[in-house]
Every structure is written in C-alpha cells, then in structure tokens.
Length: 133
Length: 68
Image 1 (cartoon, rainbow over the protein chains, first blue to last red):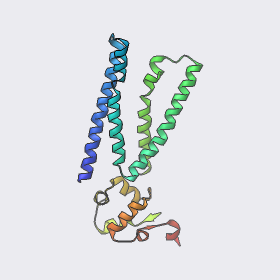
Image 2 (image 1 turned 60 degrees about the horizontal axis):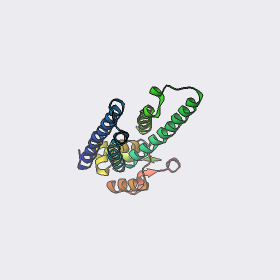
Image 3 (image 1 turned 120 degrees about the vertical axis):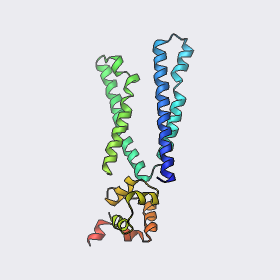
Image 4 (image 1 turned 30 degrees about the vertical axis):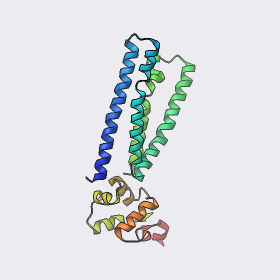
C-alpha cells in the first residue's frame, strides 16, 4: 500500500469516526428532547448541538471526495444524481399524502424520513459503481 | 474507444494494482479504462502515455479508426 492510499484510508477512517460522533450527538439530542424537562432556550441549544458534528462530517466528506480520482468522483456524481431526485420525490409525495390523508407522525414525519436519504445515496453509489466494474 | 492498456501492462508484467499505484488512481479506474467502460480524461490519458513512453493515439483509438 503506497503513501497516497494509506492517507486515503486514514481519511475514510476519520470520516467514519466523525460520522459516528455526529449520529451519537443527534440521537443524544433526540433522546434529551424527548425525555428531559428543560427550558425552551436549552431545548433549542440541545436541538442545535449536533450541528458542529455535522459540519465536521461535511468537511471530511468533501475532503474525501476531493481526494478521489476522476472515476470515483464520477461515481459520486452519478450516485447523487440518483439520490437527489429520489429524495425530492419522497418529500413531495409525502407532502401530498399528508394533505390527502393523516399520515402517522411517528412513521412519516420529516424527523424520521431523513433516514431514507442515506439509503438513496448508498443505493446510488452501488448502482453507479456497478456500471464501471 | 479502444485501448492497448491491458497489453502494455501485461508486457511489463504489472498488476492492475501496480499500474494504479504508478498512475495514482484506484484499481477500479484502471480496470474500467482497460475494459472500455470508462474513457479517461485527457490528463489521465497523457499520464498513461508518458508512463508507457508512447503517444496517446498509439494507446487509445476511436472505434471508427480501429475498424478502418
């Protein structure tokens, strides 16, 4: 393994750690908002608590994409070209369905449906990667 | 577009991973170029040509050129 691929590997490990920290911060904030009694200003602070972690994740992710070679970047672009319209389609459809019927909040609120977006992205990466194998 | 990358690599007894390392790209990229699933940028094509000491058109050919 050369120095470049070692560096790339290290970057992806750091990205994984930052992602876990972000998710931990998100679920901790969610848990606190649901179970702890707090004043409004503190609830807002807790709700915003995961943002710096997300900022670190975004920074690492963009750095990771910039360090990719041209084919890997093309795969990322194609993955996002699949994931983004799917995300828009999901949100628009849910918006219409909410007007049509009462969707259960616990299942279909935007507080929950974000979990589908990474699935769209990873699905897009899998589909795009397959084209070049 | 067709290319002679696989032949040139085999002549030097390099693996795809070795070639990828020399070109500073991923092995997936080398494989995709070799199999014609991905057409490299001009910059990468120049790097490939320099690495093998040949001109770009000696390595890469349009399908219409190779059939005529």
